[in-house]
Image (cartoon, rainbow, N blue to C red; front, side, top):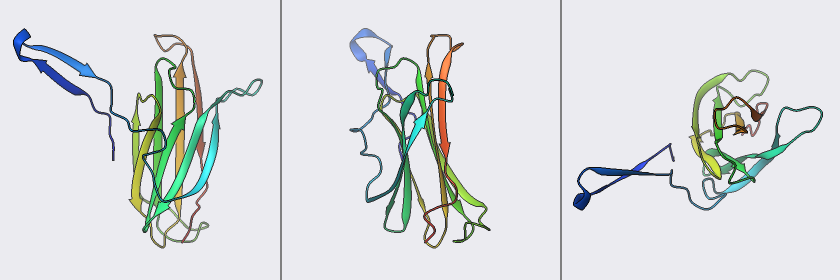
Length: 154
């Protein structure tokens, strides 16, 4: 699972010069694989003019579920993405409670995730959140999120 990373390079010839590189990312959609179960749009919480920000996807492969959040608006300055995956205690949505969870969050250009967890015979919930800062100081921003009900109960 990819977490927020910074690659540090030091130039031996220039003494102790250190350069930080942006987080490494593969091509969009490459974090989760297998069968896509759900794809849900994320809009900014703005009732008079909804702004499409991206989507959250739930995938399944070999007894494990994966969630990723993808923005279709790369290049926005100061954008933050979060992807959460919750595994329930049972395979019944009416009685499931959170037994385990994991998440990925950071200032990514294209996606957060994939967050993989084993979920055989359990329900899962997934959540995605996207924030675009309009100003560099973060005083104005758009936020959109989606949290699913218990689903994919196998």
